[in-house]
Every structure is written in structure tokens, then in C-alpha cells.
Image (cartoon, rainbow, N blue to C red):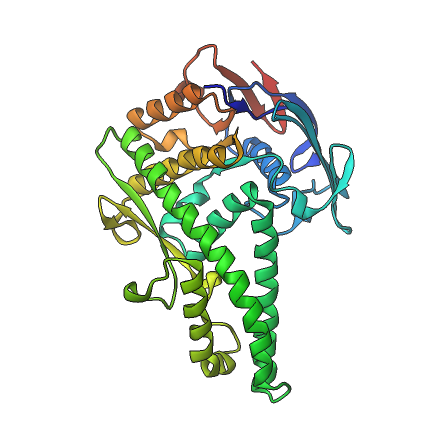
Length: 376
């Protein structure tokens, strides 16, 4: 198709989780890491994901990624992007902040999301369908941060403004500040919130169409998947359709709920409370979808995400699939693998059963045992 392929050449780990020293070359197509549970397969995906975003999808503290017998860990990934070789080097410490090096130059946390583009599907991602709204907001924020560095900057700014406004609300309640000071924060908050709302709304609209197409393909037209962005506090009659209307409605919401916010000590409305609703055959999934339907829908969503990222960056992201095959039926497995191979997406898969995968020229197997990886 003439697409520029992003793929990882090599990964080096030192004292990361149960990998004392690992130097591994990857192939541009299917890389299948198989073996018994608790041998380190998922740790490999976690290292790549961490290099992509600077955060773990399983743990909150960087120190927990370091081998228990070491004081620090090292991740180095060499990858190809836009036909140019790139490198990400991360040094983690138990008692210091991590050090980031991008192509030999010092980097910051905010520089990571737009470099090594990844899409992850792990068992925890089922929470995107039935979990708390925070799970769905996080999904959108990660995706948009990878394709738009300005979005990441605005997201950080918005979270800072909310924290400062909430602190001011508490001070007003205890008569330590004047309520009129809220007007200053609200002007900034409205502008920042409008940017996030607009980017998320557009992303959900485009993702919904891509996910619908993917679900139709995977289920052979048996299921229809759709998504809808929901703004808390806006009813269907007053749901904003553009930034100007959003700013007007959101400013009004902040003013109307000022007294309640002061009493509660937090900001009741805004993108930090918004949600995404998923529908399967026009029925809300959160209340009615089975475990199998959830898994299939999330898989469709993740595959749709690869196409969305490509549309915005002209780069196909690297697909990370953690123990996904065993829970899919034969049809969905075959459809997924056929799609990945056809689109030429570098994919890194973990599994306990080697037999679930085709033995062909596009598949490369690695056996994982006790922190050791043996290419086959």
C-alpha cells in the first residue's frame, strides 16, 4: 500500500523486571513470544509500552519495574520511523527520576508519546467497555497524545488548572480566599476544556466508523459496533456541536454550580468527568454485553486505533497483544491474524500455546522461560 512501516529493530533490557540482561532482535511482522505463565512474556510488552509513553500500564511506580536485587534498570529500543532509524534510551532508578535520551539527546517525559507509536491490547483493556469512565478517558488521552504533542501539553495544563481550581474551592469554603478569584481560573479552564472536548469528540466520531467496519469484518457482519462521546452536564437538547457553543455552555455550567463546587471542594463538570458510550447492535454494551462480546469489541477498537493513528501520522503503530488469542474463537483469531498480516503491521504477541498461530514465513517464534528468550 506504500505505507511507511514503523517497526522495532532491537530491544535491550538490563535489570528490568525479571530480565537481568536481554538483547533481542525483532522481525518486522509477527513476533510470537510463547511459554508458561509468569516467565516474563508480558514484561517484554511492558518495556516497549513504557518506552512509548513513559509510563507502565500495570504499575504506578517506576521503581517497581526495577529488578528487586538492583538499584536501577535500563531500556533501549532501536526502531524505524519515517524510514529513519531512531533510538529511545531510558534509565530507571529507585531513588532518582528517570533519565530519557532520544536519538542521543536528553529528553523529557512529554517528548515520549509522539515517537514510538504503539497500540496495546491487554486483559485489563476489557475495562474500556464495562469499567469506570476514567478507563475510557485514559484510552482517548493516550491515543491522542501519541498523534498530537499539543494535545498532551493541553491535557497536562487542564489537569493542573483543575487541581488549582479545586484547591481554591477548598480555600473559599474555609474563608481563606475570595470566591471572585474563581472567575480568573474559569476563563483559562473554559479555553483548555474546549480544546480537549473538540479533539476527543472528533476522535470518537472517526474511531466509531473505523471500529464499526472492523467489527463487521471480524464477525462477518453479525455485529455492529458504535461509539458516542458524552459530556457530563449537557443534555441531548443542549449537547454542543462546536467549540463556540461548548465554551458558552461550559462557562454557564461552572457559574451555575459554583456554590455546589465550593461546598464539595471539587469541579463538578468538565472533560475530567466525560465518558464514551459503546453500542453493540444499537444496545448499550455496558449493561448487556457478554465477556466474549466485550473482548471482540475491544479487539475491533484496538485494530481501528491502528488505522486512526495511521490516518493522522502516516505511520502504522506497533501492535502489542497480551494473551489475546486463547480467549478468541477460531473465526476471530483467523480474521485478526489475516488483517495484521495484510496490513503489514509489526505485531508482538504473547501466548501460552504456540499451536494457536500459523507456522509460516510471516511468523517468528520465541520461547520465554524464567527471563530468558530463545528465538526458534
